[in-house]
Length: 467
Ligand SMILES: [Zn+2]
Ligand SMILES: [Zn+2]
Image (tube, rainbow, N blue to C red; front, side, top):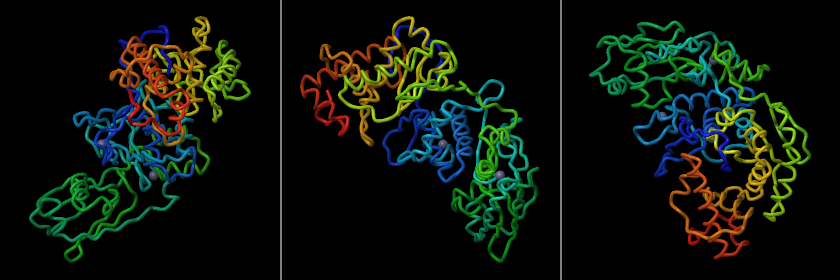
């Protein structure tokens, strides 16, 4: 990241959170995940088994849109999302490179309806007909969440299942003294069970499903497509499909992808009337040792040559090679940059993985800031920690700044610096954090020497050395 002279001040504008707080079992505190890392973790958790890249892209857009709309749903408990299917199932560690690539390919893309991120859902296998949101959750009706036929998932089989549950266990799960009658009373328009009839009167199918799942496990009744009969002291429930069936059917999406549908076609099939908002139609610009993607603005033609020079200069200053092929995305507007990255508009650029995201270059060029900005981002690539090594942000920023300009007054690390770098409230905050990070690294270099500090990129910072 690099702070800048005011490109535009957005400090009074409500910014979308750059991170989500996620509760992971066994972790004492909620984990802070960058928005796009959350998408990767949920893609691995929900769709890791997909083989079709287009189906994975459709899922990535659905997951990102769900997160945008539902962030903060666990606010009262101090985090945004849980790691279970209540929110979206997460796999935080060892995310395959293939899935990271899908997330990068769809970076920032969300589904919109009426100019806003749309309420979306997904489930495992709709059983041949998706369900209307209003049939599951009162008040959730949306035109794009009406149930409709889906023949694609059936081409992968119906995924039949069968449960044989003792009536006494079932009675306890439902809070009934005993069960002498249990039958299907009504089905929704899609054919799913809507109401059951018991010896104690009618029972809503959703309540039946939740109570049974909580008490006896979720593996027994996998969807609401079922038939039910009593057999001696047991309820026999036979059905097919899996999940609530609302929105995107994962099995159907995979089959559509295999049949050659694009991710936008898959999304249009499950969420008709919504649009995938493309922040930018990327256009490649020629460059030798990097990939530059622009939008067609004239000023961006200068980016490749300046970036090539910045790359060589960064490698020389750091004394380390850049081991990846950098990709630079040059955004056409500040708004597009903000929306796609989640960064405030006062950042000129940011680097994650091998991707450098850059604000529109015309103004940066006019203010002679393009070359220093790209040098700083290239330094981040040259100073990338070894795989598996986690470094605090102040160290990564401070080291890049110090390598660029090694003269600075050493200072101890300010406890406000790390939170300010992760979530800057204003440009002034960010400037102060950069200055302190650089001074803190300067104090480390003064004490341990430059080569020892650089070696921490491969080993992590020794505990005793944190200033
Ligand atoms: Zn949750
Ligand atoms: Zn389906």
